[in-house]
Image (tube, rainbow, N blue to C red; front, top):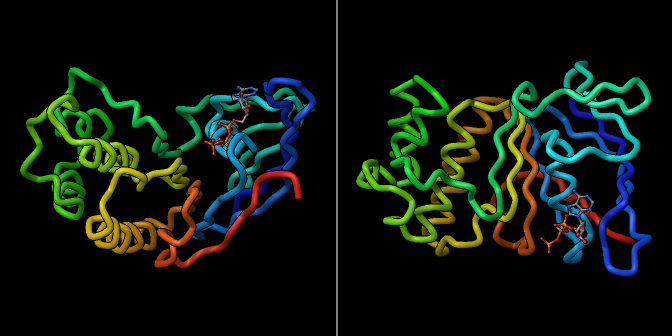
Length: 207
Ligand SMILES: Nc1ncnc2c1ncn2[C@@H]1O[C@H](COP(=O)(O)OP(=O)(O)OP(=O)(O)O)[C@@H](O)[C@H]1O
C-alpha cells in the first residue's frame, strides 16, 4: 500500500495554484489519473518518484517512509523501486533497444519476454533515431518494466500507439502487472483507452 499526502505550490503564471492531494493506492492496483491540463498530474508522478519535492507531505510505501518533510526524510529516486515512463520517453540516443534493457537488468530471459510481448524483437539493434514514435514509446515502457518495479508511474504511455497495438500491449501489461503485483499509476487524457485496465480512477484538479 502507498499512502500519499502532499502539498505543492505549482509554478503557474499568475501564481497561487497549489496541488493538494491525499490518497491511498493498494498494492497491485491500477489507478488511472485524469484532470485538466496543468493541474499537476505529471508533477504528482515526479513527487512519487522523488524527482520533485513538495513543500509539505508524506509518502509511505509498504511501511517504508519515502518522504516526510517534517522529519526531513527524502529517499533518492534510485532507492524507490519505481519504473517511470516519461511523457517524452527520455531514451538514450546512443543506446540500442537491447542496450536500453540491458542497462536496466541482467535477466536475458526477462528481456526476451518484454521484447516479445511488445512486438519489438526485430528492432533490438536499433537506436531511438531509427525507431518510429510508437516504437520509442514501447521501448520507454519496456525499459521501465525491465527492473520489475514495485511501483510503475506512467505519463500518457500509450499516446503514440495505434489502437491495435495498444489493445494487445495493454492486455500483456495487465498480465505482467498481476504477476509482479506492481502498483500502477497511469496519467491519461483519454480514459477510454484504459477501459480494459481493471482499476480505480483519480481526478487531479480543482473540484
Ligand atoms: N518542479 C516544479 N515545481 C513547481 N511547479 C512545477 C514544477 N514542474 C512543473 N510545475 C508547474 O506545475 C503546473 C502543472 O504541470 P504538470 O505538467 O504537472 O501538469 P499536468 O496536469 O501533467 O498537465 P498536462 O495534462 O498538460 O500534461 C505547470 O504550471 C508547471 O509550470
